[in-house]
Length: 323
Image (cartoon, rainbow, N blue to C red; front, side, top):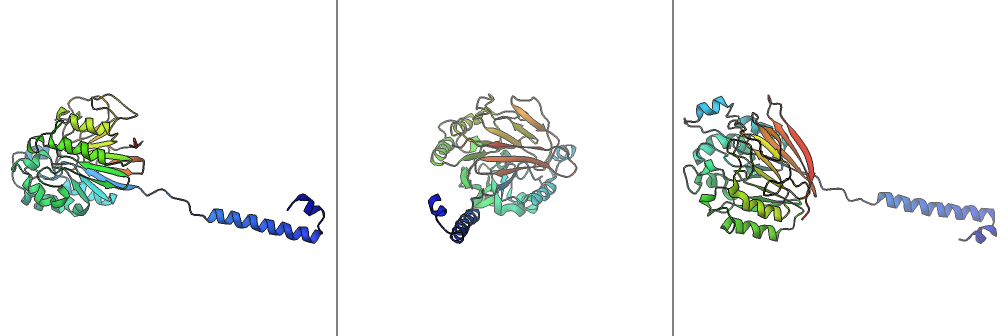
């Protein structure tokens, strides 16, 4: 309708036309408001820790455990219950001293075992103390432990690609460049195109703790860094530590570096820090607890939560590198 139309029309007709136009505009606005908008996918909640359950039998380390506040697996398991995770990453040394099946059944299963259906484990060095094939570990966790004998595997959680590696190099044919596991890792990373990537294994490449940094995992770091991975988790040292994003050669790299967490706080015992490593941003040697991660489509949050009676916590957020 043009202005000329309104000039030569009767007042009643003009009023009618205006009402029709108003109705059309209102209907269009209502339809626009009612149109569904895409809401972001809810976060995926993950809990993680390693170095968990004490040996039920008498052993040489009992006094050591007692002096260092140990055997708190039941309390860390209760903490996991309050978090309500959708997945649980067990970062090795789940059952001391030797990872035997009977010990798993007596201690680990009665504490952290309640989350077995959502658990994704990696073996620690103690799982190999009595068996060169980590028989107790593989028997207890079954298919969740990955294919034998290597025990390394990957899976996806939402927009995240998750990789569990076996860092017990002497028992899996090595961890260096060209080894069966490293070759598998490179292939796995090439085939996946997820926006975010996390890998975990027991013995950390970088650590300020008692065992210190271990360069034999350099090839893993090289592959993950080249593939723009975001997070690496480990245990082994019985403490909590978070590193700033860094390169495989420990140079700070906020744009492309990997954030590493050491979370050996599952309940077995405490340990001490010997020498602060480069890029270490947060540390606690005398605490038990779990690391809670929230995975989003292109980012993640972290929150280390201690068990009751401990005060240390650490939290933050970071964007993924988006491969």
